[in-house]
Image 1 (tube, one colour):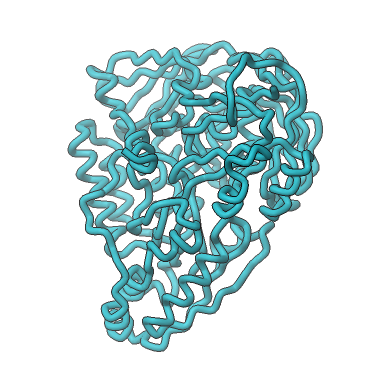
Image 2 (cartoon, helix red, strand yellow; image 1 turned 90 degrees about the horizontal axis):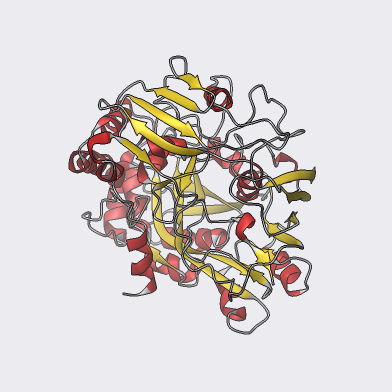
Length: 524
């Protein structure tokens, strides 16, 4: 078994209902599950307290936020998980692991769930209560807001849900939901104190670090929370620094200005791996790499054009050229190797003759299209150039437009027609709820079909694993045939650290619990 195959096996989530046979109480007492080989990044030894870790991330300029319900950039998310907690989070295998929730229990009909809270305190000393949980979820679900987790919380009837007592929440659902623990682990579903509003100015969380200072687009300094429910961090302080250019992050690491550099290019990793100055951590095949086609506007409102673009892509050339081979090819679907992934569909390969024929049928033989890209993410500009040359073989003129890093994600979410896109790991059902439903707030392809929404709700409500898998299969076959994501690869996620850094998890895909888990990191 090679490393790639091992990672795919690790991503197969155990069926929740199988683990909770009879749907009785499932008391999950762990606090994050297996952390895999975290023997230093690299090296082991006894953890020691003290010191400040400086971590360099690509940023978002003045648009950066400390509001955990708005976090979308990796820098925002890393800060959010240092300051706040969710009821649950995704383990290395993408199963929901308990955090502020100590247990959850479903009624037999799967339409009511009781969630018990562990004893935890916010940074101002107030206990985390059921009322805080309900306030947080209702804030996220506010129709006037555009919070990341809104679509994921849609199954919950928050008007009917209630606080049974200070540490027990009864969630009433709009329909039976078999994978409700995934809702608790949703990206952005952080718990804030009841009544909290201006979270950018005065963030009060229950996380392992407390805020000292924050300058959007520049730096954030956090200090250890000695009263953290999961054990005080080893570090005295954690500083996030913004370095948009990958070369700047690498040079800061080499020069001793930082000890942790997020998101390195494969070429950089090869140049420094094993040479003693930088430790390289590879999180295998963590990030979906894609081109997002807007299905609500020309030319991609015609499914024949979308199918033609699927056939234009030479996926292996994109992986080799844009990722320097550090990844595997995709097949126009999210979640390769995860539970419910439709691995029975034939692997697409380039077919320029068929692509030209489809474009001719659509009246788009001389098609010109603009592809938005940016150096905001590793491989984006390279992938755009490679695809431009591939498209020329089908008679399509692709004009590459390079945008700024600060506003790229906000710009391409609604504007343009075709853009470079990526995503970290999450369960397939979470990807669908966040990005492919009519009311999803991060629907980059503008995929909006009521019958598709209905299939998703049916899958959510289906208790039997095989029947649920069949429904997710139907949704994926439709996306494979006419969806808006041209998924060409899955990239390794690469992190660089100073040799003195210990405790960086080597198996946690980006966006999971143990990714950017700075409360478990220490300096030798």
